[in-house]
Length: 389
Image (cartoon, rainbow, N blue to C red; front, top):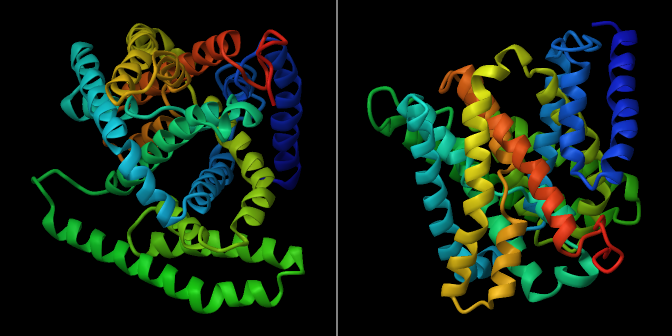
């Protein structure tokens, strides 16, 4: 690929995203949907402006790594343990119910057991990006409703990290004990290294040169990508390494500064990730996956909010709070897209099952985002009464 084509691809992605994002914000839609739709339009299936998506996918993968790094950096261990006591039963019970529902839908439409399980896994999670982007910080973030939403999302993210770590394991001949033992040892070794290196090397360097913001920025990027590469060398996923790198830094006073400064870089690569997802979507297969995708999307949108509501009310939350939390978490997650793509790359599922997960996720993004901004306070709410920053 020539330099000119890379520049042209970046031009198509970000200029096109800016134009469509303007229209989407007027329509009160999630920007994630914009990036995916742009990828479909610019990809081989429609206009063919991006006809070689290999390097785009490689760059987009960095966005996922930064996303998990920033999730980890906002999750200090003491906060994690506190949330486990508070919302672990709700997050665990809801995840199990969604897994069973997705498994049933997958088997109903004739997918293999492995594909049905992955479909069920995809339904376990709600969108962290939609949940947080549409949560007004001045109204809910520091209040009870916001705390519940954030706690459940973070616990779901942890479950998703574990699944991403386990997907590459070969399960053909039953439970692969040697692989599991090697995986656990690699994970423990990576966590130990991250803790020791952060405590005795990294944090001392950051404190020594903390007035030079550019240095902190570079160290954070190097630490994130270095841990991602080390995890890959140990047989784990790069995403797991980035998440552990973030958690290791989470106890540092500089964590908030790093998180805020890396967010634009993360967003840059995530735009490319979702664009690449759309560009790789073959519209020729749309007819074969439309019905199961629609059914799964409708089931999720209709059932998920009320499962969360029922579980929260069981633990003495009010009706209004429980319903609002359920609605805000009533979609499938961007992690489901990651899992669908990785499972396809690893030949765990076929292309049709992967497309069903991707299309149903996009449909829930669209309808869930629109309903939230019509009904609840958010930065892009329809009415002035609901619009909150």
